[in-house]
Amino acid sequence: MYIHVVMTEASTGPLRVLMAYERCRISPNDLTTMICESYVNGATTSYVINANTNYSNPPVNVISHFDTACTITPVVTVSPAPGSRRVAIAYLKPTCDGSCDYLSDVCYFESMENGNEWIDGSQWPPDVYNLTDFGCGGNERGFNDVSICYDYQDSLHILYLTCGFDPTNPGYYQPG
Image 1: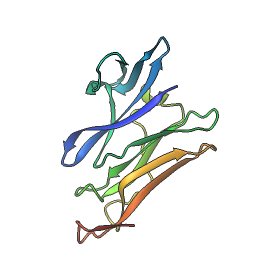
Image 2: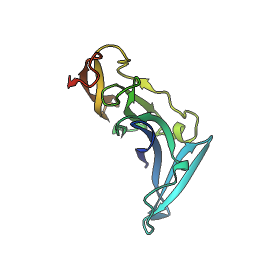
Image 3: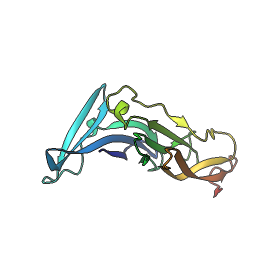
Image 4: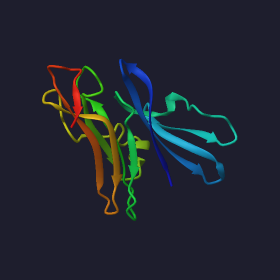
């Protein structure tokens, strides 16, 4: 059994954060030890966390970064369907230069093999699917929150907020 972890860290420029993924599991030989792994720089890397030590910040060079974002939105889910090995990550991706709060698309990527292809590098970085494709024109955007889940039939559901946006008045937006 795995624990799929998504996180944000560090700033990559004005209002941007790195989004990252790793997969962890409890050691079968020591229930106080967790082994975390990801695909970084062309190789699968791992590190160990032991409950008896104070280890709150893993080294950055062992975490797989997959994109940048403006808000802390990456979320992960696993399917509860019997026999399923599906894992999905959704997040808000900036669409244009400008304010990050209201210029985002809703994107996701998915593994059919419990994240194995992400960890072994055969599909890292993963193919990202843009659910909304709002782009820079128009007056609707993804706005600051996204949630995902699978149902018992193994279907992925992505919920998100939108807001109205007036391109002639960039500071103006209203929930849609």
